[in-house]
Length: 385
Image 1 (cartoon, one colour):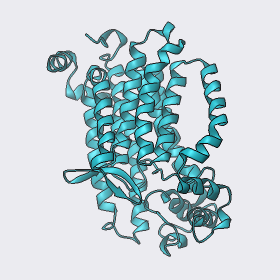
Image 2: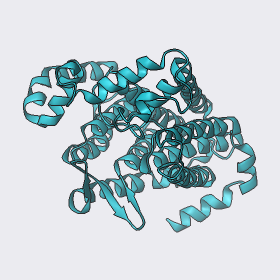
Image 3: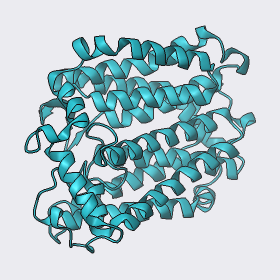
């Protein structure tokens, strides 16, 4: 491994060349989104940075450091360590079951020195890396074979099983959708997806009765009929809808949200922070944030399209799918389009592992762009010897 790293480093361009090749417009959009998140946390704390604001900035700084590291490391090294990184993260996810600590009824975190790690967040990045490596190695004519799906399906299934044991159904579903999205982008035959959808539909009664925990079934029922328990299970989504509606087109003004400052909104720093933004800045502010998210997605898929290596294409597209699923699931959740699943809004919600992992993923995407721009990541150079 050391020999591989030195060989790769010996062929790469300078640190300053890579910095010059960075997509600074892309980076600026990410900083703008993160700044919106800090402003919203300042509002949720009643006009104070002490409660969550400074902690958020420190975590964003760590994430930006990892983003820069991900950009500067030669892309051939990321290919080499894709599988080891996957199994390392899988090991940390496995450790959660034995030494993880509980919070809010779930055991999902590890104490690592001075911070808490939620392994499920970097696990998704590791899954994208591993699947990108697999399809980079796989000849194009073998992608359509059913036998070629065994390894990627195993890579997807292993973390899902561990996530369901925590239990973390929301992240398990998102991980499954992420894996399926990458299989689709890799060119797997449509008939396999159709068969899987039909099998899933037929399995719904079994899943409802024997797989879902009682509280998870209650979430589905609350999603369908939130008014049946307005002060209990339906409180979160009903208050969210009230705040969304009260914001109107232009909102009550920054720091002027009544649902926010009168503490009617639950989990307003994390899962429901989009509702705070919608109440204070209104529909126009909400659309503005979604526009910024759309620009990020556009950058990611343009980088994927321009990549001359299959690994780079799959990596950028896979991380784009991961980002889209996070953003969509949070916004859909707080607007009542899907059940409440506890998914943070990317770069906006208060958090640690989710923010750092997401910025690390963006660094990998920028790595694809940088090495394509300077010619160090062409298909000819991505040998695995």
